[in-house]
Length: 134
Image 1 (cartoon, rainbow, N blue to C red):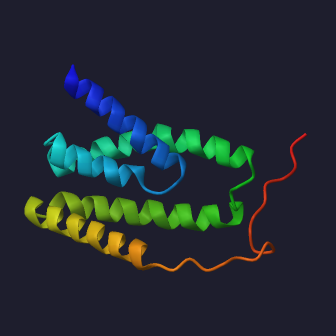
Image 2: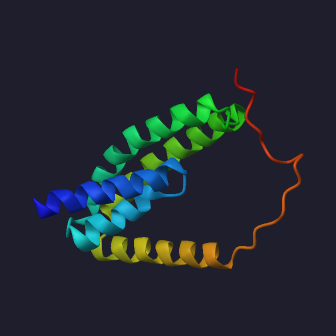
């Protein structure tokens, strides 16, 4: 029961982060591999299944509030699908130890870049505003 409650809590917390669009699935991978002791390839599959409903829920609300730049969606989604397919195949072929090191290195580099990144001040003209609701 404790394992179920922990998984429920992690799912809730990473869902909140996913709702902000900032990588809840990445944190879910860390939980699955380090705390739940699930093999990385299996965790990747779980993460993909987790992503579908959480992304759909967030997408509905972001679209409702007009926070999606639709002209950017098609090329980004097309490139994302192609690269996800290719690199999923590659991930299945890599030695598990190397895959873990690559993922760990990715997390470290991402963390460093986020900590070191300076946020530029945006003018009100550059910010996307939601359309007026009635």
